[in-house]
Image (cartoon, rainbow, N blue to C red; front, top):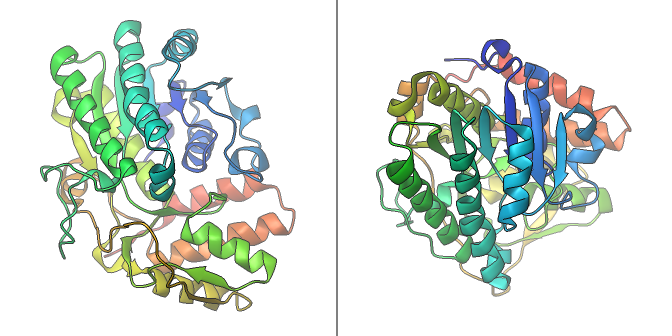
Length: 357
């Protein structure tokens, strides 16, 4: 199992889109701890409270720009000021159910935002490696019992999933048309349902559960039998960092799509997750909501054999540990602790864990 270390990242200039979001905040903090200079570009934090503010991320950045990836000129100008070595693109409209309400915005952000990012990187010339973060939902989901591999057909039933498949196609087109010899080498990272402290997004099961716990109200849950490939947020972030390193150092062999999914045994039903939270926080209660809703996939998981074999990446946390860390982070926040310190300690703990599955 290969570890992320500061040897590569020390002093690197990293342009990170979506740095004010849940995953982006964790990655900003981790990159800072590794010694990188992080230049963030994103909309204002999407919720209140949010990981970005409660963990003091802004003061750890070399650059912080509030901007929209749909604004090609603003994005290019911010990237030009940063002069990055590495670009990691995480900005997105990330919610399946919201994409039914705002399909045009979803495609504009997730597809044209990717185009604008790739075009800015192509014209800049300083970038050696670029990672586009998409999703496990970019695959054509046939509700199979086995995990999807990187060579499976792309698709997507809903606007969010489909827009991320389109983002993958855009990435492939730019790689083939403009970057066959690098500058930058381009890869994509595909991960599923991430959990962790600091996520207050609407319409996500763990944040919804913790909000219900705080309010002293039972949570009503759609599809408690739906199975998802749950993993702690640090798992795919480690994959993105390892991929960026390989792209920068070894280039062409790694310029492709990569899955970063949990162990097969950690593809669990929603109901199982909620029972685990109830065990960790006995005041939590939930029930099934049987009201009509939009289509959501019932079963989807990834085959991450390629990342395990060629990147040396593998899950470090079992799902029970990931849930324990998530609830502990939330309880520390409720207790008024310094969340940058709490988050840093969880990153350090993650690096010492080893999942044998």
